[in-house]
Image (cartoon, rainbow, N blue to C red; front, top):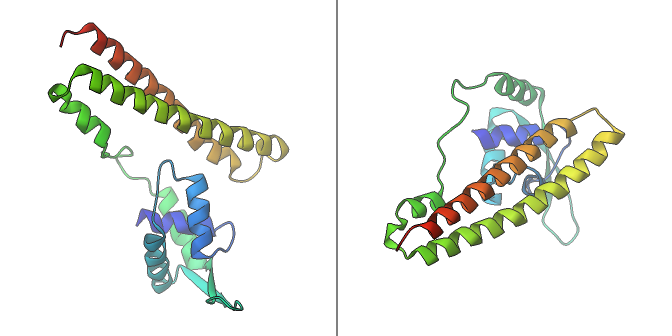
Length: 183
């Protein structure tokens, strides 16, 4: 149901098509929550049945009609209730294939594992560049207008930057330890 509340949150600012929701999700919260277009459309259908959203059909010449979704008053109330109703446990177990592979890496040569850590660091460096770019953009917007969602969106970006820096430090420490051990 979290995806449903994400959709409600996005629609609380402006009406969008399913495709626009996907594009916005991809360029905003994709680092901590991702969804396929098919999942979004399934959730839109479910939210409409609950009365949380409605849509208007916009005719397009030579293309299929598009549905533009809007949040209803009931949807807004459900979204605010969800925001206020924090779970008892805020951190949830995650699945991390990289860590699973590290857990079983005694079966690899240390050079192979070092190579995997180096690739991981490179991936995180690229991710950090994206976070830094987003943070610069949000900081510029924040300087112009301190109202709205920008401040809170920036908090999630800063978490991503902190997490990436910590992961890079951890990976570098692992490489150093691997270099110190004998095969």
